[in-house]
Image 1 (tube, rainbow, N blue to C red):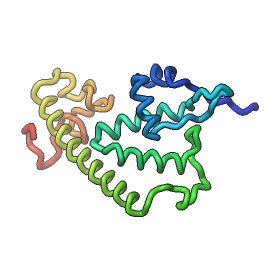
Image 2: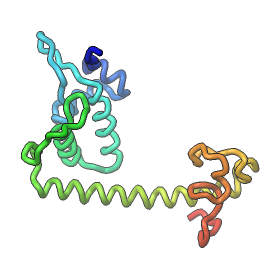
Image 3: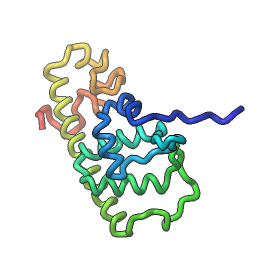
Image 4: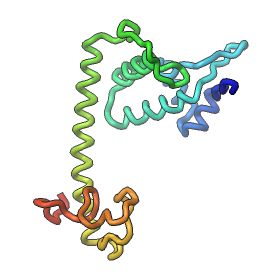
Length: 176
């Protein structure tokens, strides 16, 4: 079986595929957050499909409150441990990562803080979803006959299973 040739994107193609403006992508490239996977003979930069994942990561990290410098460090780590096509480098070594131990510890701490915040928010929104389901959802959803939009498509999710409309022991029907 012949090796597959990776898809390559111009910056304009990448903008269309990602839904992020070309100007923003140029800014990411200038900051070193995105690097081309190949260059044409004429010097035109081409990006691999992995760039689409990196763009989504940059956007998500930004929304999660990571600073530009923190995002730059995360992208530097990704560049050190992944090939340009996005496959994991089994042979990466610590000395190839252009970040200090202090930078890596800071990244670990910030990631843990964000994860804790997301978990708190998820618990709160699940309680609120259960409250709304119990009091306002269609009867078929309340009775567990049909799943609701927040039940993960699980039939019976409204009957007391975690994440469903029922209230676990010790949790009342309040919104918070």
